[in-house]
Image 1 (cartoon, rainbow, N blue to C red):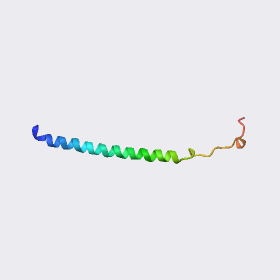
Image 2 (image 1 turned 30 degrees about the vertical axis):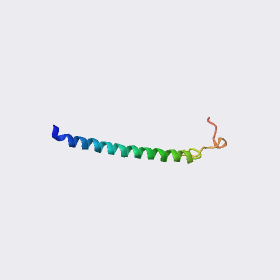
Image 3 (image 1 turned 90 degrees about the vertical axis):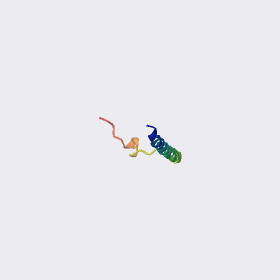
Image 4 (image 1 turned 135 degrees about the vertical axis):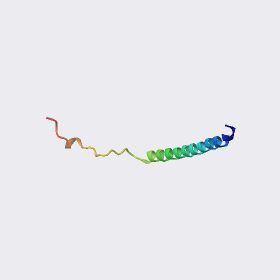
Amino acid sequence: MADHWGFVLAAYGLAAVVLLAYWRWLVARDRELQGAARSRVAPVSGHPRSEHASRHPVQ
């Protein structure tokens, strides 16, 4: 078992590097989305709103 400690430490090191890179990507993505949310004036839905006068009464 003592002969494998180098591989164990390398695996933990690699996992730490991958998680750190992923964390940095998430932070950058969050900043990008927060900037887009601030620059948007009004939420846009997938369809236009109908005017009250254009609606027909329910019978």
